[in-house]
Length: 593
Image (tube, rainbow, N blue to C red):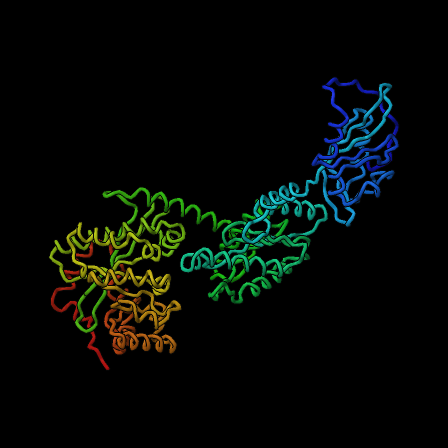
């Protein structure tokens, strides 16, 4: 009814119904909650009910005699009106959604039903329209659509919307023969924030990260949250990969500043992987997968950097996946009598007495087809995948079994050091595992030593302190491994119930020639002794290193100078041989200074 009327339609058959009085019909017209508008055959308004007045703001006097098209907002497609008039001509009825404008200028969507009333000869007498404001239902529908395509936390497009927008951008770039860059962004060590401060703090950080990302790129660029702490930025129509590199550096700087979330000042650095269309993939799935590969390469390169995808990364990712699958199978296949894993032991020599006082238990993996897999390769994968928990439990129980075997062989004064991972230390069952293994093999707490790395000690400090206190109260010796390689707080470390510091091999390696390594070793030994701790130096391979460390006052040495890690079956003979008169005295060096 809001456009010029075409010719009249053929008459329709009458429908028979109960007779209604004029009074009843008038009451229906006046009291209806739907707006009702009646027009004559020329589509001029002849009647409007109170609901129409309330909805539009116009009185009957203001609209009488006008064509209803004056209500049109301009937001309805002209084809809709054409379809409406065609339906009224052919069937005498039409319904659909139209946008109108109220007297105050505001626009609103209405759902309208229009009927053409005809006389007995089929000529149109009137048009009757009834309609309601559907703004609320439209808004509700829009909210549902928004929720379906947007992340509720950051309000960025979600994975579903991202995939759709990326495919559209790829088709456009393919048509225009241009390039597009996809960046996959992962926040470094974000899990630590959630674990220590709670998810509400982590959510606050993610909202601020999303805002910084959006503000750092063009309005035409796509920014989305894929889930967790993983975001993506798509740069359509770039000149070259150098443009992507420039934007990646800008994003690094934007995200590197501090964040204030409640009372907490936080820092979050990004690892960014970049793939470029068309060289790194011609479809969204391939580009995202390759950007993911590049992002993990950025993680392995030390985090807080960006890396472009290269085919060799895919090869490395494939090798890693093969290694992970093999590791999962090896861990799940461990039985009391069979395992691809074994323990080797490296002796620790007490400098002053020249005696072997301890052994460090080290896991080894001999795969049927991969052969001997270095610990530097499989331990990191075990930690990333969570396999370190079952593997670590096996190492602990197997170490205790070998300690029991030493005792039965008559070797009673050797303590075995067992490495504990960060995941094991966070697990509430660790104290029960330790007590259970000691009881099972009838061992004393003093028979073992637990080693944790410096970085592990700094994670979740309150939980770490509580668990280490339990072990110390039991009488277990505790050691900080790889000391000097992390970012520890000495104020915190002094409160830990530790007994030994292990000086990392990276400082010992060049101690004869590097004045910095000499200074670090000297300071660490002095610090440890001032705290009442025993100092153990790893990686000792030469007599010169041994002599220098002895002069510093280091207590215990460990390294190839004394023995490489040896299989468990050789340990008893080695220890008995070292205990023979005159054997270990040759390696002993009197303490000086």
